[in-house]
Length: 318
Image 1 (cartoon, one colour):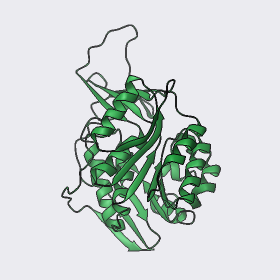
Image 2 (cartoon, helix red, strand yellow):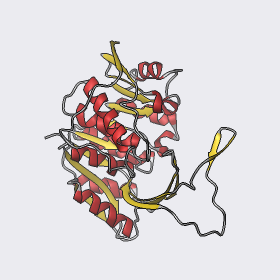
Image 3 (cartoon, helix red, strand yellow):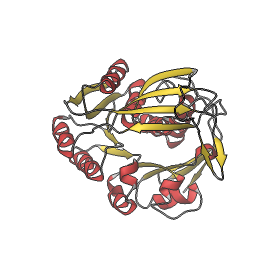
Image 4 (cartoon, one colour):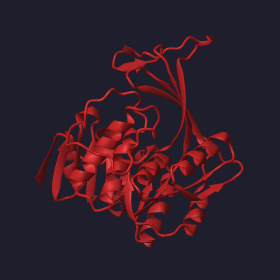
């Protein structure tokens, strides 16, 4: 069984959904406006765990892989909710340390009827680099490591060094702390086996006007590159062939939270098992599409054995 170690922050999310959260556009920016001092009744409230690393860990578990999650959390209600969800999903949480003084992130998500959202995020109190180093010392070897939203570039470097020392391959979907310094991020990409970014993020690393150009240039620094462009589709290459794909299907969007995590983890859940680039992209697209039809980042994640249909894509040799 393929083993994948997911590392990064966890979040407790509360989703508030109401027709009143209807964005108003000013120029190119959409706003939600709420009257100050008012008490507003909300039509629906949903509670779910989130955080990039816990989201991807659930995809791996639902696909029947040996999914482990490593991080340090606290004894606060948000941390407890995250742990309960992961245990329910059969994610191995034996590498999670619980410390007084640490707190999981907490997000209040205001959902517009279109599925777009505004997120009010409390970042919590995350572990120090030394905490992550101690946890990694206890971690068994893994086939793959998926670090995301680990809090600092230095922490990411520690994780990549551990992966190299233990012969684990790495998939990286960088978070804000890593993307903040593109030059530094680019310097560590030779240690990464699969890189997944959106168009705007990839344009900070390499030249390219469209996602195919970005993927082709990205192959100079990473062996497998995936670049997404929202509803315009995705482009991926393993250095042998290149795939351009549209949307898996046109579905009503309830909530876009976790769609990127679902795509990236969906890809790795298949790629790590030796599936083809085409098969991996199709499942990734299906997983992401399913997630946006549910509220929360985990509810729509696909389970092992689900039937998939064909999707519009083009595959050609490099």
